[in-house]
Length: 256
Image 1 (cartoon, one colour):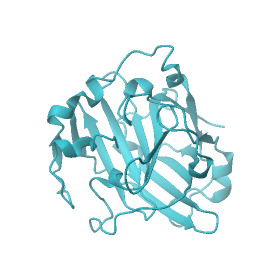
Image 2 (image 1 turned 135 degrees about the vertical axis):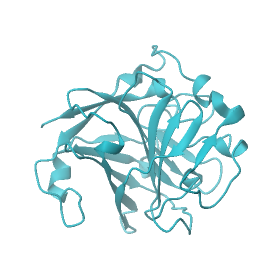
Image 3 (image 1 turned 90 degrees about the horizontal axis):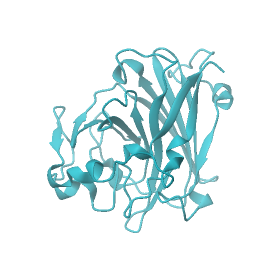
């Protein structure tokens, strides 16, 4: 989650550790979706981009994640441009691969970085409200696009903190998804890699691999503005804004 208008913090009191019953109204910033959501046009035709999640055929490892060789069978998507689709920065390039089983959606981010800025603290389980105010990799998922104002958001930081949110008509709620994550930093290569395991039951009540979802993938890096806001499918808003469901791409589930 992000945007340069200090996002929700203009209307939501900042606090370090959100209670489990978190349910926050965006109030006057509600137009972060209503003001930007538009039908696909020639200007946002990149919303037709397609990501592929491949069926995991191997057993997961002792930590519940796909083995390394399995990830290489997944189709990589890469992005290094900002949210407008311009200003490439190869030193902040991001690669995303996706695998699935009937029980779990696995996502791996491999992130090149210039510098890393993270929060030093989080809730006991690593959940951290306003995680987007530091470096993160983000996934927005919309299993059901019937209501375009409803989608799910997952973020992970280079030090393994995370957040999961259900976004609905200008409100956010902690999803309690049971998200699993594993993060490794390679300082020599200047990369950090995050593997996420999201239980399917937290994403949809009736998973059908023949039914495509809508999705987008993002990165944020930088200690202070101007920060680097990159997107797989550009949102092309005047200011950085990831909350543009009309710009989401397509996520398909395939067996190979």
